[in-house]
Image (tube, rainbow, N blue to C red; front, top):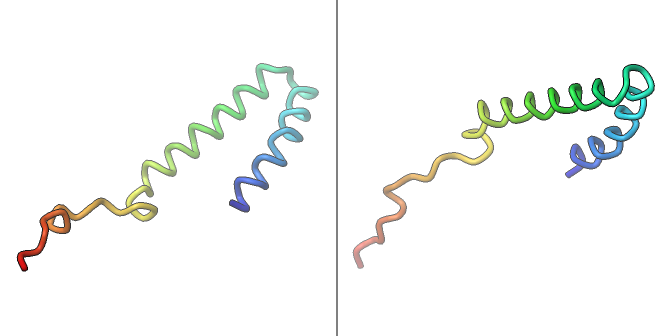
Length: 63
């Protein structure tokens, strides 16, 4: 949650700076690139975040 708050806070500041520096196109491309990088990091490390379900655990135990 803290990282999301920091990202949300800095996003507008960075977008404003990029817009002043290179226009709206630069801001969209940079933020799109950061989003693509975040997606790639998630896809690569998703098993560490949410491990795959074990199919043996879905079978009810005999009592």
